Length: 379
Image (cartoon, rainbow, N blue to C red; front, side, top):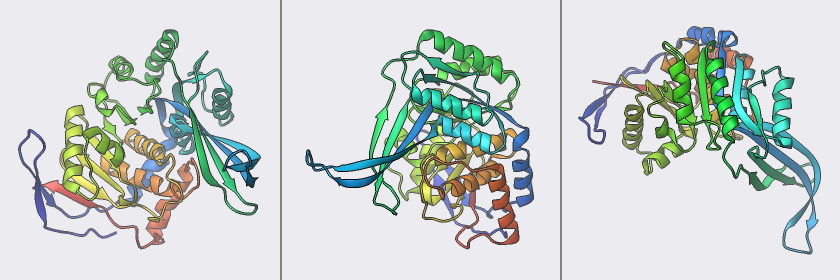
């Protein structure tokens, strides 16, 4: 891959701050051997994941007729399929990528919670810190997919079941004690906060204060990113829609607005970097010295983006835990995200998938629409 150069420049003035000049620079060349070496070390890393486990349930059926009771379709149920969602999908991706993953979380004493514990036990993930809270509901997203015989099912309805009460104080205490203990020998902490109450800024701060020395903490928070401002987070991985909601704005094609929002978040949270996922527009990595725009990896037409952010969190965290730079980690996460969106449903990719993708890049088999990143640095 040959770097391309450019000389365009523009300035960015964060709210309440001095002007920052952003100038085009040579596109960073990707050292594929470095990326491969990082991915190969994934299996040597131990990651603790704190977050909300969600059950993604899929109900499949064939359309039999229209009901006489109401103008609705009647589905003849064929089968039910459950996969880990939310923080559970992130944990599943960590495991698929070869890491030793230790989830610290809570599920309800219900069928979805039992199914999640059974699943992770079956793939040899330590489930001792997946606590069961009596009377609490495991967050569950049930999707009904309908189709005719010999056709692919299409989603026609989604039903969400969510907790209606806070976690019991005794369970929260168990989570806190266990999290502190598990972090003693971990290489990184990944926080996957979907807003169901398992993770909190206070919990992360308490756990971080008990872990001495430099330590990687990554954060994917659906609703309350800035609440983690004093939690010593290393890097956050919001998507563009979450950034828009956080700053009450619309970004679209306005890169200056994206830069303003990401800079404000990085400064407010004292982050080393912010990695913003942008769908078909790829990713944008914001560091103190540079801004890197990374085009989407693979096909621009995704099959299914469900859970792609969880895959990005897992790959990005693992790369940082292996000592990768934020930019190299972002390239790996971009590959991982590009691969997983080509799979249907809540999916994972493996360490082998990533290494094979890097091999294809080396051999020149990469599709022509996979472009180099455009890296910008202050003049």
